[in-house]
Amino acid sequence: MAVPILKQGPFLIASIQSALTDTDVLQLRDDVMAQVTRHRSKGIIVDVTSLDVMDSFVSRSLRGIAMMTRLRGAETVIVGIQPEVAFAMVQLGMSFEDVQTALDLEEGLALLEAGFLGP
Image (cartoon, rainbow, N blue to C red; front, top):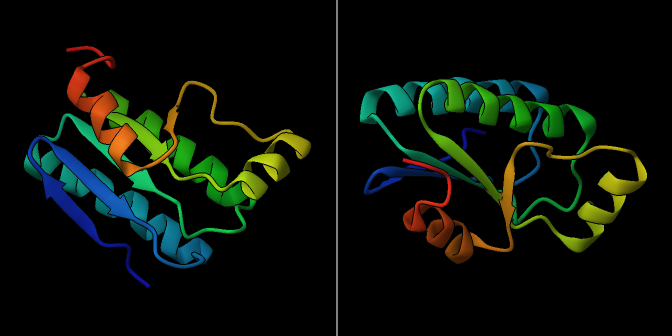
């Protein structure tokens, strides 16, 4: 299932609405990269609120998306990590080092708009 990516000013919002297969995650990566280039986006929010499980492949892939978009001049904020998911990630040694996270979409947009991520 394709993840919808919406344009909000200079930012993109990718809202994951259901569990993703590995193929879906790779498609998300390709779609985000294409949209960043097409719209010359300055920031991307990936909303994972609806995910109640995040395996290591999804976690690594989201981190990879953040690193790739940074190389293209855009910062990524992961929002909506559920408490149970955060707990499991910590227990399994997974993290989003070097990737900004926020409680929800509103906070993620505020971070990008405030320009804390740089020019």
